[in-house]
Amino acid sequence: MSETEGKKKTPKVGLYVVDPERKGAAPSKPKDAKDNESQKAYYTRKYMEIHAAKKSTD
Image (cartoon, rainbow, N blue to C red):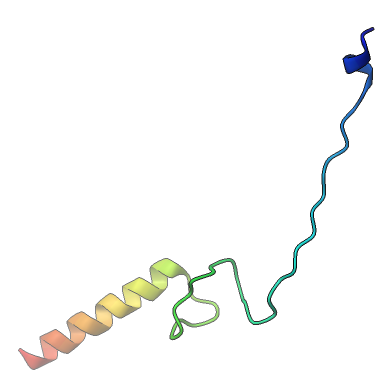
């Protein structure tokens, strides 16, 4: 058996500081988004708000 086969590498574990103000995984979440709202749901809601406003003015 060669030297490289007998050795096992240990996984590297890195620690990092998490900002307590950050919720969820999206770092650039819009300020007016709801806490439990997905990105798709947010943009769908915004789209509907814009087009509902247009429809009511026509």
